[in-house]
Image (cartoon, rainbow, N blue to C red; front, side, top):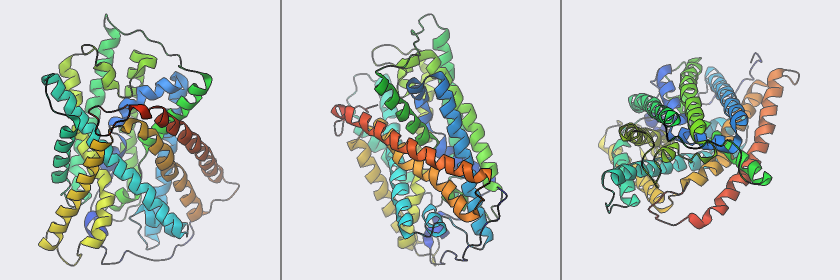
Length: 451
């Protein structure tokens, strides 16, 4: 990382940019960035990790999980260096799309990043609403087995709560919410691990089989689907926007935030993956809570313990939905808000309430209409997170710092780009294939979420 960066043209955000001034205000400390990063990465998707190991096996599962952790930490660190260089050159980038378009000198790259980032962020917001609604449905079914409420009604409840929470005006204002999110992720990880230990040591522990199922071709496609899911779990398509919330100068602050985030990742990811796969093997569900709470029998662990997990998950999903909505709010308010009037002025509050409410209603409607986000998760990882988080940061670093062709940094960056381009293509094929095979399970406005 010792190469000298090339100077960049000095160009700053226009003073009329309300999206930057309001939504992405720069007041945060490094630990606030750590809270935001942890919420963006460590979410209920970690409950799929035993299922990921089901498609990879023990050793390949450990290798892929560790490799993805190392590569993403390195990738996000490189991007933070590029952003720091831009700031030191008098040009602070606060949006992913601007960073990619300006450093790479390509107009189409600007719109490519807008498309990918918006698709990912909206998809995550939809998924957060859907999964939170499913958790409420599980709690309701446990308390009232003969109840008549449908999944879409719980999704509507979640959407209403999200509409209220979405009125927090700035990304920085989520710092305390995201600190709570960090503790919630540790909370349901503890619940899952404790429940799996209880089941694994109990008299009625399930028969464990760690062999990979299916034909050789199915094993290969399942492996690449699992890798795509890991990519989606580690994905963070809003690092520049998170770094924008830091009070300048930003030098070194994101590294500290990344260390905090990956400390939480180490505790939560490995413990969930190991405990869940150890107990259920190749019968692990795509959500380990479903394995612990089977539909055709009693819960395998104490109900009060699993109930805590079911409560912690939707609470954190509110924070995740809010974090990934910030890019949409920033885009909307760049045009709708007036930077010359206060953030709480009537002129700005009314459009903010209307636009953010409509956005959440849109996400809630799609969540109710398309309740099969499990299969889409792998596709999103392969087509969205892999290019945004595993390829572009290396390319941006190489374009900015121009490392020598004889340097190890040059070969590491190019090797990662080539490897993950291949992984993305194969993962896309495998994930789309599974989506097609499961298509007969899909039903619009279904009362059950398809894994």
